[in-house]
Amino acid sequence: MMRGPYAARVESCIGPDVMTYDAQALAFDRLGRGAAPALVDPFGREITYLRVSVTDRCDFRCVYCMSENMAFLPKADLLSLEELDRLCSAFITRGVRKLRLTGGEPLVRRGIMTLFASLSRHLATGTLDELTLTTNGSQLPKYAAELFGHGVRRINVSLDTLDPDKFRAITRWGELDKVLAGIDAAQAAGLKVKINAVALKGVNEDEFPALLEWAHGRGMELTLIEVMPLGDVGEGRLDQYIPLSIVRARLGERFTLTDIDYRTGGPARYVNVAETGGRLGFITPLTHNFCESCNRVRVTCTGTLYMCLGQEDAADLRTPLRASEGNDLLEAAIEEAISRKPKGHDFVIDRRHQRPALSRHMSVTGG
Ligand code: SAM
Ligand code: SF4
Image 1 (tube, rainbow, N blue to C red):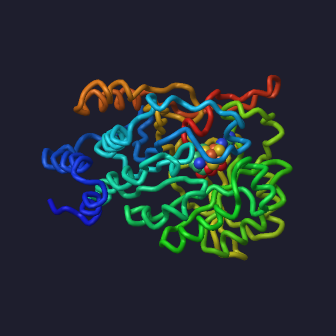
Image 2: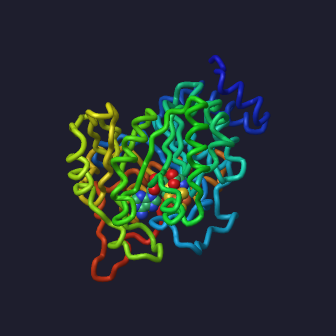
């Protein structure tokens, strides 16, 4: 088998240690492991999309995501970069074609570029279609070009407002200028950028027309996200929640929105915006059930596999990962977990108790 350009770049970036993984991947392929059976859940859905949280830490403290005084996990609980590589690679061997690194803020994890570099070998061998990330954008001025070099082509950047004061209020610690510079750097490096904005009642709900025109004007897709009841963030969820049906109806008064059949296997539904010629997505977990076409699972930075974002059921992959150098135990644990993937979720904002339906934060599961 030919070694592709990414593999060569990996070697030059990170040296022979991590290349042993590349050698392993090639050996797997030679042994025909590339033909290992796909992961199919009890409802016939093939798992082709993996999201991995590489850290629970972040340089922001967004009001809907974290409390100001978050207690983070001890370092020893986190998977090492090598373990993350092994875990992702095991999923890729079993048919995952799209891999998204997230967090917390993935770009604040020390050494994260070595993980992108090593994972890019799967792009080179053609076993992975897409390596991507979701980021708050603050570190993109530093990393955008390197990400492109490791085969990343599209990224999601979370940005809820273009108003510097509101931005500071939402993120608590963030600076709008840095994120805008990050978006500039990403586009300059050749990365396609999609903007994700969480709709927050009374905070940014008046800004969506401006955000839409700005994003589409720069050739970026925009997706609006309904706030989800995940984790205690020290503020009432009902205060934050605005249904996207209302946002969409208001946008419809200003723009011509046409439903389109574009699907990514995920929770977003899309419209074309005639005035801008761009695409607008709506992610509405609370008002629309998107589970029937779900092709994804999530792994936390401690190696816990969540088969569904909206359910508590999970599988520990760290124990089998650390139990042996080979991947047999790990693969068996993954298979067993996928056989338990539920049909769908049942998010509820508990109005009586004003508490989240799920106790874990989005920064733990990975958005
Ligand atoms: N730090 C990165 C970022 O902000 O893009 C990646 C992780 S963040 C948890 C991923 C996405 O989850 C972001 O777009 C964020 O806005 C979204 N998110 C976090 N908490 C949320 C919540 N409670 N409801 C809806 N979306 C949420
Ligand atoms: Fe950090 Fe992203 Fe959560 Fe904001 S949404 S606190 S940027 S992990």
